[in-house]
Length: 123
Length: 110
Image (tube, each protein chain N blue to C red):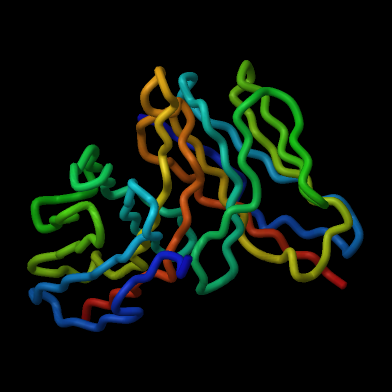
């Protein structure tokens, strides 16, 4: 278990440029989450995937943001036409939601395991 | 809108004392409750999870849940300077995303 891996660790870009971040979850985890965190705030939910399906998106995820998880493995988060307000730490997390025989998906969410994050600075 | 409220602090306690961190949440359907610790510049790491009313103890940490009052707390006994960090409360319903509070900053002085 190598943990959740994010790349790059830091990204500095000019306003208006596009950026893409990658997240590799813990291999046996079927859920993958993206959060954004700014100084003094808790992580803010952006979106999450169950396997390859994107199940929920926050209203924070404007049309400039897109996330994918092809084949249910790694995920990418792209921000188009970056703005200075996009400067933040982008956190990826994964979890394992187990199926209970006869009952379907577990009623309880397992804890999230976070990567080290990608710090984005838009100048 | 689902909300999770925490006092931002800072909460200052002397070494060896008990630190008490509190959290309230708005969604009555919430089923899973977590406490994460976050050191400056690092990502959150899980300390405790609790799913049922009552207390759950793990070493120096005790999580307390009261669903009727929509309240969850974390007690840290014998606080150490290494416990100085931001503590994040997180809550969700099954199948939905985890919602975090803004965090409480704890400072333990030696």
